[in-house]
Image (cartoon, rainbow, N blue to C red; front, side, top):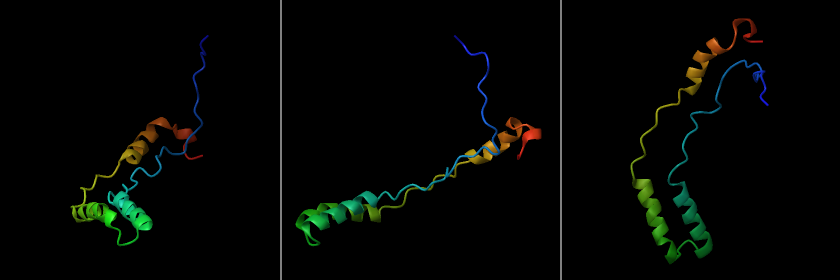
Length: 92
C-alpha cells in the first residue's frame, strides 16, 4: 500500500551545516599520548620508551601537512535557500 500524500518537511529559516570547517586533530597527538603513557608506567628515564620518544621527535620535526581549503557548503546552501524557501514564508 503506497501513501499518495508527499512527506512535508517542517519550515526552515536557513539551511546550514554546523561547523563544516572543524580543524583536524594534531597528527602528533597520538605519539605524545603514547610517550606520556610509557613514562607513567616505566618512569621518566625508562629505557623502553626510547622508540616512542623517537617517533614523537620525528613527527614533531616533520613539516606540517598542507592546509585544506575551507568548506563552502554553507555558502551554497544559502544560495539555494532562496529557491527552496518561498518568499511569503521567509524569515518567520
